[in-house]
Structures are given as C-alpha cells and as structure tokens.
Image (tube, rainbow, N blue to C red):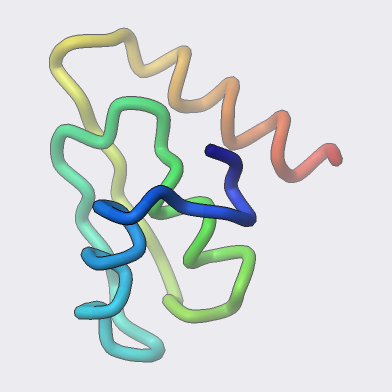
Length: 68
C-alpha cells in the first residue's frame, strides 16, 4: 500500500469523507489515510494520532511524502 493507492479498507473509509472536511484519524498507524486525502485535496486539514506508535513515525511519514 502506498499513499497513492490505499488498500480496500482505507479506500472504503475515504469514501465516507466529505470534500473539504477536517479529518481526525485516531489510531492512524502510518498516516496513510490523511496523507492520501491531503494529497488529493480531498480534505482541508487532518489530525493524526496513534497510541501504539510514536508521533515521530507519523511525522516522518508526512515529511517523506511532502519531500517527495
């Protein structure tokens, strides 16, 4: 799975998000959903949090995506 190609579960979740919405992805794991939706300009803002992993992994994924 990549940020451009979500798996079936996350694609299903993405289909429920309204255009321009603010997304809260609690239990985000690797932030695939918020990054994918932000990159498609489908949402205006995202909060991503996960207790199972450190926030630094989420931020690292965001930086990797935006740096290309």
